[in-house]
Structures are given as structure tokens and as C-alpha cells.
Amino acid sequence: MARCPITGLGSDDKVPNPAAGNRGTYNKDWWPNQLNLKILSQHSNKVNPLGDDFDYKAEFAKLDYEALKRDLKSLMRES
Image 1 (cartoon, rainbow, N blue to C red):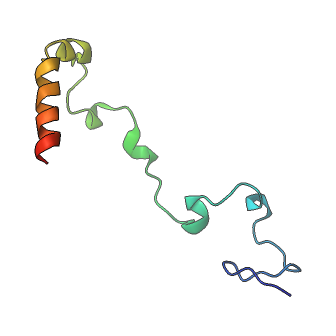
Image 2 (tube, rainbow, N blue to C red; image 1 turned 180 degrees about the vertical axis):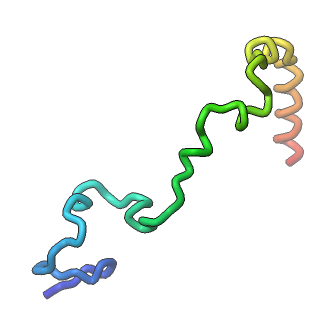
């Protein structure tokens, strides 16, 4: 009987997690006790260093786009 080189299971063995059979391998399969990091992406004033009154559109309008492009091009050539 041939055995899987990864799991060590043979063709007669039961699959430990039948739901994982056709879905591929996820991180939680390898590290089932990993930390839940979703708490870090919550929308809160505590995680927003710019504050509620920050206007992204207005700040982006102040940006000198052509100068930024020139800087990036020169940086890419020199690096």
C-alpha cells in the first residue's frame, strides 16, 4: 500500500478532516491555534493616527504629482 509522503496516510486510512479534502490547505490547517489579528483592522480612532477630520482628497490635491514621478524615476535608476 502506497502512503502519502506528507500526511503518512495510506489509501485505506481515514482522512483526519474530511471537509479539507477538496478545498486545499489553509493557514489554519497548519497553525490551528494562531492569533486572531482581525482586531487590528477595526475602524477606530485609536488606530487612525490622522484623526476623523483628515481629508484624503484635499491632501492628495496638494501633492505635486509630476515632481513625485520624477523623484521615483530617479530613485529607481539610482537604486
